[in-house]
Length: 259
Ligand code: PGA
Image 1 (cartoon, rainbow, N blue to C red):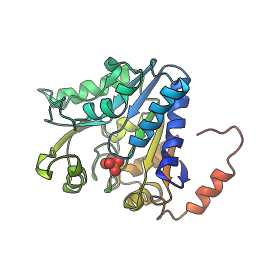
Image 2 (tube, protein in one colour):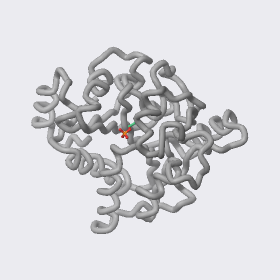
Image 3 (tube, helix red, strand yellow):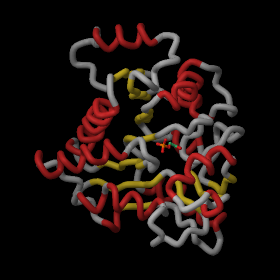
Protein backbone atom coordinates (compact mmCIF):
# COMPACT_ATOMS: atom_id res chain seq x y z
CA UNK A 1 0.00 0.00 0.00
CA UNK A 2 1.32 3.41 -0.93
CA UNK A 3 0.05 6.42 1.02
CA UNK A 4 0.40 9.67 -0.89
CA UNK A 5 -0.12 12.78 1.24
CA UNK A 6 -0.87 15.94 -0.72
CA UNK A 7 -1.37 19.41 0.71
CA UNK A 8 -4.83 20.18 -0.68
CA UNK A 9 -7.91 18.49 -2.14
CA UNK A 10 -6.95 19.97 -5.53
CA UNK A 11 -3.59 18.19 -5.39
CA UNK A 12 -5.34 14.95 -4.40
CA UNK A 13 -7.57 15.28 -7.47
CA UNK A 14 -4.64 16.02 -9.79
CA UNK A 15 -2.76 12.95 -8.53
CA UNK A 16 -5.79 10.70 -8.86
CA UNK A 17 -6.70 12.03 -12.32
CA UNK A 18 -3.12 11.46 -13.45
CA UNK A 19 -3.27 7.81 -12.37
CA UNK A 20 -6.63 7.22 -14.09
CA UNK A 21 -5.47 9.06 -17.22
CA UNK A 22 -2.44 6.75 -17.49
CA UNK A 23 -4.77 3.72 -17.64
CA UNK A 24 -7.05 5.39 -20.18
CA UNK A 25 -4.08 6.32 -22.41
CA UNK A 26 -2.61 2.82 -22.24
CA UNK A 27 -5.51 1.31 -24.25
CA UNK A 28 -8.88 -0.30 -23.56
CA UNK A 29 -9.51 0.04 -19.86
CA UNK A 30 -12.18 -0.81 -17.34
CA UNK A 31 -12.71 2.02 -14.86
CA UNK A 32 -14.40 1.54 -11.49
CA UNK A 33 -16.20 4.76 -10.59
CA UNK A 34 -17.30 6.03 -7.19
CA UNK A 35 -19.87 8.64 -6.27
CA UNK A 36 -19.92 10.91 -3.22
CA UNK A 37 -18.28 14.34 -2.98
CA UNK A 38 -14.65 13.27 -2.82
CA UNK A 39 -14.07 12.06 -6.41
CA UNK A 40 -15.88 15.02 -8.01
CA UNK A 41 -12.70 17.11 -8.29
CA UNK A 42 -10.95 14.12 -9.88
CA UNK A 43 -13.74 13.85 -12.46
CA UNK A 44 -13.48 17.60 -13.13
CA UNK A 45 -9.73 17.20 -13.70
CA UNK A 46 -10.32 14.26 -16.09
CA UNK A 47 -12.92 16.32 -18.00
CA UNK A 48 -10.34 19.13 -18.30
CA UNK A 49 -7.75 16.65 -19.60
CA UNK A 50 -10.30 15.42 -22.15
CA UNK A 51 -10.96 18.99 -23.29
CA UNK A 52 -7.44 20.39 -23.18
CA UNK A 53 -5.15 17.39 -23.59
CA UNK A 54 -7.07 15.12 -25.99
CA UNK A 55 -7.55 12.45 -23.34
CA UNK A 56 -10.03 10.08 -24.99
CA UNK A 57 -12.28 7.68 -23.09
CA UNK A 58 -13.61 6.11 -26.31
CA UNK A 59 -11.95 2.79 -25.46
CA UNK A 60 -12.95 2.79 -21.79
CA UNK A 61 -15.91 1.22 -20.07
CA UNK A 62 -17.01 1.97 -16.52
CA UNK A 63 -18.74 0.26 -13.63
CA UNK A 64 -20.26 2.12 -10.70
CA UNK A 65 -19.62 0.82 -7.21
CA UNK A 66 -23.15 1.04 -5.93
CA UNK A 67 -26.70 2.34 -6.25
CA UNK A 68 -29.65 3.20 -4.07
CA UNK A 69 -32.53 0.73 -4.16
CA UNK A 70 -35.85 2.24 -5.16
CA UNK A 71 -34.76 5.64 -6.48
CA UNK A 72 -35.92 6.00 -10.08
CA UNK A 73 -32.93 5.84 -12.48
CA UNK A 74 -33.74 9.38 -13.63
CA UNK A 75 -33.75 10.75 -10.06
CA UNK A 76 -30.94 13.35 -9.85
CA UNK A 77 -29.37 11.55 -6.89
CA UNK A 78 -29.42 8.05 -8.37
CA UNK A 79 -25.78 7.11 -8.85
CA UNK A 80 -26.42 6.48 -12.54
CA UNK A 81 -27.56 10.09 -12.84
CA UNK A 82 -24.73 11.44 -10.70
CA UNK A 83 -21.95 9.69 -12.61
CA UNK A 84 -23.34 10.83 -15.97
CA UNK A 85 -23.93 14.40 -14.79
CA UNK A 86 -20.58 14.79 -13.03
CA UNK A 87 -18.35 12.86 -15.38
CA UNK A 88 -19.22 10.61 -18.29
CA UNK A 89 -21.57 12.94 -20.19
CA UNK A 90 -18.67 15.45 -20.44
CA UNK A 91 -16.23 13.02 -22.05
CA UNK A 92 -16.36 10.62 -24.99
CA UNK A 93 -17.17 7.54 -22.90
CA UNK A 94 -20.15 6.00 -24.71
CA UNK A 95 -23.26 5.97 -22.54
CA UNK A 96 -23.85 2.29 -23.33
CA UNK A 97 -20.49 1.55 -21.71
CA UNK A 98 -21.37 3.30 -18.42
CA UNK A 99 -22.61 0.53 -16.15
CA UNK A 100 -24.20 0.49 -12.72
CA UNK A 101 -26.32 -1.87 -10.70
CA UNK A 102 -30.05 -1.36 -11.31
CA UNK A 103 -31.60 -0.39 -8.00
CA UNK A 104 -35.05 -0.66 -9.53
CA UNK A 105 -34.74 -4.22 -10.76
CA UNK A 106 -37.79 -6.29 -9.95
CA UNK A 107 -35.51 -8.92 -8.43
CA UNK A 108 -32.62 -7.09 -6.76
CA UNK A 109 -31.03 -10.38 -5.70
CA UNK A 110 -30.81 -11.54 -9.31
CA UNK A 111 -29.62 -8.07 -10.31
CA UNK A 112 -26.72 -8.32 -7.86
CA UNK A 113 -25.62 -11.59 -9.45
CA UNK A 114 -26.03 -10.14 -12.95
CA UNK A 115 -23.87 -7.13 -12.09
CA UNK A 116 -21.13 -9.26 -10.59
CA UNK A 117 -21.09 -11.37 -13.78
CA UNK A 118 -21.06 -8.26 -16.00
CA UNK A 119 -17.88 -7.00 -14.30
CA UNK A 120 -16.25 -10.40 -14.81
CA UNK A 121 -17.38 -10.51 -18.44
CA UNK A 122 -15.71 -7.14 -19.05
CA UNK A 123 -12.44 -8.63 -17.83
CA UNK A 124 -12.53 -7.09 -14.35
CA UNK A 125 -11.77 -3.55 -13.25
CA UNK A 126 -8.32 -2.10 -14.02
CA UNK A 127 -8.45 0.84 -11.64
CA UNK A 128 -11.11 1.34 -8.98
CA UNK A 129 -11.73 4.77 -7.48
CA UNK A 130 -12.92 4.63 -3.87
CA UNK A 131 -14.10 7.15 -1.32
CA UNK A 132 -14.34 6.24 2.34
CA UNK A 133 -17.27 6.78 4.68
CA UNK A 134 -16.81 8.24 8.14
CA UNK A 135 -17.63 4.73 9.40
CA UNK A 136 -14.92 3.17 7.21
CA UNK A 137 -17.22 1.91 4.47
CA UNK A 138 -16.11 1.57 0.86
CA UNK A 139 -18.81 1.28 -1.74
CA UNK A 140 -21.75 0.84 0.59
CA UNK A 141 -20.12 -1.97 2.52
CA UNK A 142 -21.01 -0.93 6.03
CA UNK A 143 -19.18 -2.18 9.16
CA UNK A 144 -19.74 -5.91 9.53
CA UNK A 145 -19.56 -6.58 5.80
CA UNK A 146 -17.78 -9.81 4.96
CA UNK A 147 -14.31 -9.11 3.63
CA UNK A 148 -15.13 -11.65 0.88
CA UNK A 149 -18.59 -10.29 0.03
CA UNK A 150 -19.87 -9.97 -3.53
CA UNK A 151 -22.42 -7.55 -5.02
CA UNK A 152 -25.56 -7.66 -2.91
CA UNK A 153 -28.26 -5.65 -1.18
CA UNK A 154 -27.18 -3.85 2.01
CA UNK A 155 -28.90 -1.76 4.67
CA UNK A 156 -27.32 1.65 5.29
CA UNK A 157 -26.33 2.71 8.78
CA UNK A 158 -28.10 5.74 10.21
CA UNK A 159 -24.72 7.51 10.13
CA UNK A 160 -24.39 7.01 6.36
CA UNK A 161 -27.97 8.11 5.78
CA UNK A 162 -27.25 11.26 7.81
CA UNK A 163 -23.99 11.83 5.90
CA UNK A 164 -25.84 11.54 2.58
CA UNK A 165 -28.92 13.55 3.61
CA UNK A 166 -27.20 16.69 2.27
CA UNK A 167 -27.97 15.47 -1.26
CA UNK A 168 -31.69 15.17 -0.50
CA UNK A 169 -34.44 17.41 0.89
CA UNK A 170 -34.40 15.47 4.16
CA UNK A 171 -33.00 12.29 5.67
CA UNK A 172 -36.39 10.63 5.18
CA UNK A 173 -35.75 10.66 1.42
CA UNK A 174 -32.44 8.79 1.71
CA UNK A 175 -33.13 5.17 0.78
CA UNK A 176 -32.48 2.57 3.46
CA UNK A 177 -31.30 -0.10 1.04
CA UNK A 178 -28.60 -0.14 -1.62
CA UNK A 179 -26.96 -2.49 -4.07
CA UNK A 180 -23.20 -2.45 -3.69
CA UNK A 181 -20.19 -4.25 -5.03
CA UNK A 182 -18.86 -6.36 -2.18
CA UNK A 183 -15.46 -6.14 -0.55
CA UNK A 184 -14.51 -9.31 -2.44
CA UNK A 185 -15.68 -7.72 -5.70
CA UNK A 186 -13.70 -4.54 -5.04
CA UNK A 187 -10.64 -6.57 -4.07
CA UNK A 188 -10.58 -8.19 -7.52
CA UNK A 189 -9.92 -4.84 -9.21
CA UNK A 190 -6.27 -4.73 -10.22
CA UNK A 191 -5.49 -1.32 -8.73
CA UNK A 192 -7.40 0.33 -5.89
CA UNK A 193 -7.25 4.10 -5.60
CA UNK A 194 -8.74 5.38 -2.34
CA UNK A 195 -9.23 9.14 -2.00
CA UNK A 196 -9.99 11.08 1.17
CA UNK A 197 -9.96 14.77 1.97
CA UNK A 198 -10.79 16.78 5.07
CA UNK A 199 -10.36 16.24 8.80
CA UNK A 200 -13.71 14.46 9.00
CA UNK A 201 -12.09 11.45 7.28
CA UNK A 202 -8.90 11.37 9.34
CA UNK A 203 -10.11 8.75 11.81
CA UNK A 204 -11.50 6.43 9.12
CA UNK A 205 -8.30 6.75 7.06
CA UNK A 206 -6.13 5.92 10.07
CA UNK A 207 -8.24 2.86 10.90
CA UNK A 208 -8.22 1.68 7.28
CA UNK A 209 -4.49 2.11 6.71
CA UNK A 210 -2.97 1.43 10.11
CA UNK A 211 -5.62 -0.38 12.13
CA UNK A 212 -6.32 -4.11 12.19
CA UNK A 213 -7.89 -5.80 9.16
CA UNK A 214 -11.44 -6.15 10.36
CA UNK A 215 -14.97 -6.15 9.02
CA UNK A 216 -15.59 -3.42 11.59
CA UNK A 217 -13.61 -1.09 9.29
CA UNK A 218 -14.46 -2.38 5.79
CA UNK A 219 -11.78 -0.23 4.10
CA UNK A 220 -9.11 -2.11 6.07
CA UNK A 221 -9.55 -4.91 3.51
CA UNK A 222 -7.26 -2.80 1.30
CA UNK A 223 -4.34 -3.98 3.42
CA UNK A 224 -4.74 -7.43 1.82
CA UNK A 225 -4.54 -6.11 -1.76
CA UNK A 226 -1.25 -6.07 -3.69
CA UNK A 227 -1.75 -2.73 -5.45
CA UNK A 228 -3.33 0.08 -3.45
CA UNK A 229 -2.73 3.82 -3.65
CA UNK A 230 -4.27 5.92 -0.89
CA UNK A 231 -4.26 9.61 -1.81
CA UNK A 232 -5.17 11.98 1.02
CA UNK A 233 -4.76 15.66 1.83
CA UNK A 234 -2.97 16.90 4.94
CA UNK A 235 -6.25 17.12 6.86
CA UNK A 236 -7.32 13.55 6.13
CA UNK A 237 -3.77 12.40 6.96
CA UNK A 238 -3.96 14.17 10.32
CA UNK A 239 -4.19 11.01 12.42
CA UNK A 240 -1.78 8.77 10.52
CA UNK A 241 0.94 7.61 12.88
CA UNK A 242 3.44 6.98 10.11
CA UNK A 243 2.67 10.16 8.13
CA UNK A 244 6.29 11.29 8.24
CA UNK A 245 7.42 7.95 6.82
CA UNK A 246 4.83 8.06 4.00
CA UNK A 247 6.09 11.53 3.05
CA UNK A 248 9.69 10.31 3.20
CA UNK A 249 8.85 7.33 0.95
CA UNK A 250 7.23 9.63 -1.60
CA UNK A 251 10.16 12.05 -1.54
CA UNK A 252 12.51 9.11 -2.17
CA UNK A 253 10.38 7.23 -4.69
CA UNK A 254 12.61 5.02 -6.83
CA UNK A 255 13.09 6.41 -10.33
CA UNK A 256 10.71 4.79 -12.79
CA UNK A 257 8.35 3.48 -10.10
CA UNK A 258 4.91 4.79 -10.97
CA UNK A 259 1.84 4.60 -8.82
P1 PGA B 1 -17.96 11.40 0.35
O1 PGA B 1 -18.48 9.92 0.57
O2 PGA B 1 -16.92 11.33 -0.73
O3 PGA B 1 -19.19 12.16 -0.08
O4 PGA B 1 -17.40 11.86 1.63
C1 PGA B 1 -17.59 8.87 0.67
C2 PGA B 1 -18.33 7.57 0.87
O5 PGA B 1 -19.34 7.56 1.59
O6 PGA B 1 -17.90 6.55 0.33
